[in-house]
Image 1 (cartoon, rainbow, N blue to C red):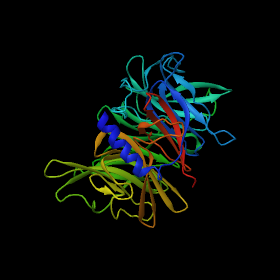
Image 2 (cartoon, rainbow, N blue to C red; image 1 turned 135 degrees about the vertical axis):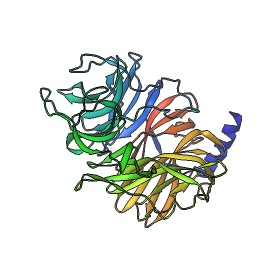
Image 3 (cartoon, rainbow, N blue to C red; image 1 turned 30 degrees about the vertical axis):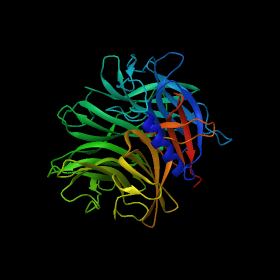
Image 4 (cartoon, rainbow, N blue to C red; image 1 turned 90 degrees about the vertical axis):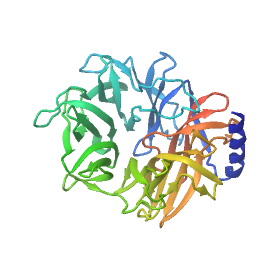
Length: 419
């Protein structure tokens, strides 16, 4: 630990002038899934522990008229009753482990809950251990929870197929939730679900696209402005990032012709795509012939057109005097012809401690800066030990964060870019 603080202190000295101001929103006992921000930037949601009940809960914070974010309020807990099913939740995050700087990231966990106005969509496990996807909606100042789809239920398609697993649903424009599902025969599907306007109404998911022999094994969906991108394999078994074409109702490959700056012979695999306004950003891992793995983030936004990695592990970042051991979990946002990508990174000196960084791209030029990093001193004098972000981590220049501080506190915070 002493070595970590020595490295962190040196890193702080070299990045102090670059760091953005961090606003603390609330202190919380434990953060299980880091915050995700709404498309309109006016609210964010996360999963933590409810102090009153000691149970897992989904929290929401709203942007107030004075420009500050409200103290997060509990929306749903594991004790909440699910309408129509007449049962309760077992957990929102299956890895119920103590929160620490070294383990400050999801391990095979569920995706972040996604919020838009007074609707939150999320994944969860119910009392009988079946997984499902749900929405919570605020009506007459009261939150109600409804199911969208549950494991073993029949899918609304022909021939008959049954839900096996899900990717957490994204609530997007016009109250539509878009989600990825697999069936018991392991085929992949993407559905759209229109949130009912009234509690007495009921809708069925509508199929948008399904796997076939040419494109299959969908995973890690990303939704923005009613459209989406996902990872998928083609007939050769190679994984690509694909964007949904609404006109043809097909997935179209959208990847670089060559992964630049990777070592010769390295097999590069895309991970975690992020979609926005027809452009994408995604992380990769590439294993060389020597067995060593490098990590990178690529994008075609900001007129970069995949010309080179936005950021690459093992390469010195001169502007920050650091070298990344790993980079992952990018979120893309575009405003005024400039692209912004938030991502998580761990440094060469201690690959288990995570920080949050920002890549700004204009006319193909990439600028990197820290957002919340190990060793950073806050206005209250506390030191950041680790920082993470959720599935959607930047909209309208606002970045919600989960932080672990040097005094042991876990806090929810935001950074504003002023764009």
